[in-house]
Image: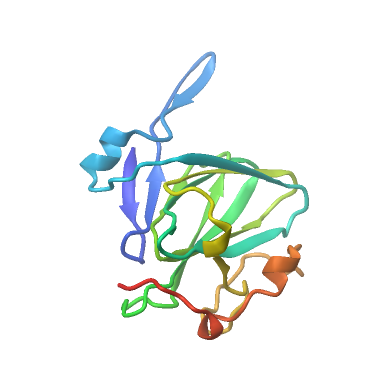
Length: 184
């Protein structure tokens, strides 16, 4: 696996080694040993999967507050997405800044998003499946979100469409109106 730290400290792009032959290919998407060798010590507790039918579906920006904050290891297993992490840690030099990357079934890249960051993605094609591991179980009382097009954050989403949103995401608060408990 190749680990490349993004412009946001703690957010990693991970490229699995792919081994192919006449039958197809094989890859490891997670290895506790290899992650620990890179200083990443996580205990994943749950795997999640989503399917989005329409191109331009936007999910996010989501997070869980402390004490149930989640780290996520995200990958796209069908189609492609523009995946985004936003630093929500008060006192961080990157507070409110974002990092985005295309994850696809073809490029097999993954994005590791640590606690204290919001996560969101936009589908770039129809019929997209996304899978991700989390190191904390879902806790509805700690569930939070930031508006996907908050002007302070200024995410440059790659396709100019009116996104397909859930009611929750459509009415999420701006970062300045959010009650966060993440500290750098």
